[in-house]
Structure formats: structure tokens, C-alpha cells
Length: 489
Ligand code: MN
Image 1 (cartoon, rainbow, N blue to C red):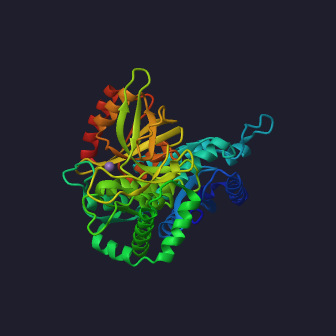
Image 2 (image 1 turned 45 degrees about the horizontal axis):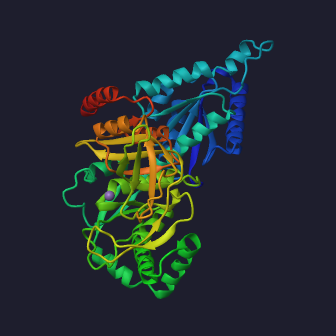
Image 3 (image 1 turned 90 degrees about the vertical axis):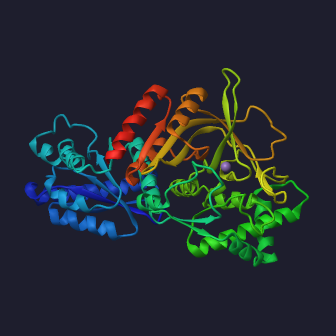
């Protein structure tokens, strides 16, 4: 996260004379410094230039496009900056773009204000001219209004930066597939060429047999080292140490293959474990805890989304995991959804120290796998699903409220999370199903729907948000209109 930077580009023109331009430049640098010091920005904001001509704008945008550290540009107009000057540059922009609608001073200085003050401090004027050209160009961009020293303003800029980092990560993301999609399943399928064109994801397959070779090459010392890590981070509650060691072997092999190929996400399927003794459970869970994306049953879309959201939320402590809707508690007035997976839920969302256990797995035909068992924490979160609608991708995000599970479920040997979706369980289910959302999701306590909307806008894909105010009727109409719009786009 710290390796990315955002360039602050301030618009102006020569009309005001050098003194005003010097003041603008000095204040812009001061604003970047003080916003960096504010503690709300995850990445560095760098004041780059006060632009006065079309050439200056084109130059800084070209430079931003080619600089790998630059994850986006942030623009603002302290004075007026005629927007035809921005046309050539903005047309070339390939990086995320945020327009700050702010001004240097908080208040209008009643006694002091005169026309000199008005000339220097006319962001309300300049930001409208600047906003028009982006609207005219139909450019995807974020507009954030408010005073730059305000905590909430800086927090929103920081949240947007995280979404923009998600774009940078997405454009370089490689996903390693072991085995194909689970037989006959539709929602986990998708057009990998379209996904790469839109999102940058390189999704390719490697033989399970190669993974088995990597696993066989793992040394006892490597397994010992990882076992120490497991025992530090988790409670070992099994006497079947060999089963746990097998997971350490699998984790080391999978990680080595991914790292050699530069992959940050992987998928596998219980239907293709040729040569493997256990389905990776603990192995996958611990890999997710290290930031790798994962999707079960060959679901590379949810795997990549998990990796992207984990990258967006680096340094935050709420947690993000691959998740699956399993079963409902439909007691009237007390309705909840129970999410889990066969094994693979990320311990970053655990309410307390996870326990390593070995249990028989009813699905598939392998040995009893070691896995982490825990309860998810209570709190606000989102579930996110990316589906392929045929010709386009749709990102669905639902606000949820996770709770401490209302029952112990002592015979359920997997990690589990209980939640209430918005606006309520019944309407929430109807809306989710109406939108075509998958059973697989990314559950995150660290990102918001606004950030996922920002990310979807920057990636140029459809976004659907199911929230407190959603009704099935409004959603049906929204989906119908979006379907038409995306066909024309
Ligand atoms: Mn599944």
C-alpha cells in the first residue's frame, strides 16, 4: 500500500499573474503535506504541479500513465482553469481520477473579503468548470466535496485511494487455477478473456499433478517451520498431527508455485485432487490470511475478488474472506443467514483464536482434512459477488450486519459467520437472487459499498448495491434499465 502514490495536480491559468500562481502552488504543497500528516490516507499524496497550459496537463498525465508507482491523479482548481486546456490530457488518462471540490479557507472572511480574495479563492467557480469537462468526456471519476482539513473528507479520499489501489492490483493480478470449474455449476463460470480485458486478470491453469510434485519436494524442515507458525497462531485441537502436517506440505507447495508465477490468487476443486490425500483446508485458510485470494469449486472470479479486496484493505483489521451462503434461520423476527464453506474461510475474520481440527469431509473422496474452526466477528460488513451476465460483468454488493452466532452448533466442524443482510433477510434474499448474485462471495468488514462502487466505476463494469433502502420493485426496474444501458454501451 505504501508503495503507491497519488499525484495532486492543481488547475489554474496565467491570467492571475505570478504572485497568485506562487500562492496557489505553495498552498497546494501545504495541503498535500498536511493531508498526508492527517493519518487518514493509506498512500502518499504528492503535489506535482500547478498546470496552466494544455501542454503541461498532457505532460503530467502522460507521466502518470507510465509511472508504476502512481495509482491515480487527484485534481483541484484553487482558481479558474479553463477546461478546454484539459481536453487533450484527460483524453489520454489511463489512471484513476479523483476531483476534490474543496477550498483553502474554511470561512468567508467577512471584513477582509474583496475582489483580490475572490480572484485567488474561487474553487467553487473553478471546480464547476473542471467538473463539466469530465462530465462531457463521460470520464469515470470520483468527486469529493468538503474542506480538506475535515476528517470525514480526508477519510473519503483515503477510502477512494484504497479502491484505486484495487485497480492497480487488479490490472496486474494473476490467478492460478488447479483443475476446472466444478461440473455443471453456472455462476462460477465466466469469460476469462472479457475478465482480462476489463479487469486485467490473467487467469490460467496449472496441472494438479505439478502441484503434487511441488508438495512431494517440500522438506520436513519446511513443514516443521510452518507447524510452529500454526501452533503460535492457532489452538491445536487434534491428535492427528500427520493430517495437519499434510496441510503444511500443501500450503508450502501451493505458495511456492504461486510465488514462482507471480500469482496472488488460486482456485481448486474437490473434483480434481489427483494425487492429493486431502482437500487443502488449513493450507488455504492460512494462505488467505497472508493476502492470497481463493475460490472453491474452480471459482476464479471470487478468488480474484478476494485478492483485490484484501489488497484494498491492507493494514486494516476487520478481515476479508471467501464466503458462501449456506443455510437460513427463518424464525420470525429473528432471521439470519449462516455462511461457511466446506473448509476454506479466512481466519482474518475470526472473533477469537481459531482451532485446528481434523474431521471427515462428506464431499469428495479424500482423507479427513485439517481445517481451522472459528466464529466470525460481529459488525458491519459487505458481501460482494462478481457474475458474468454474458457480454458483461456485474458486481453485486450487499450491506450486512454480522452477529455473534445465536447458537453454539457444536457439531458443525467448520468456520462460520452469521449475519442479517440489508434491508432484512427476506427482502435481502429476494433482491440478491433477483440480481443473480452467487452463493460464493467475498465477505469483508474492511471495505464499504462506496469503495466497491468506486472500484467498479474505475473498472467500467456494472454495479448493483443492495442496501437499507432497496426494494424488490425498485431493484427490478434498475436491473432492467441497466441491462438496456449496458447492451448499448
Ligand atoms: Mn462453494
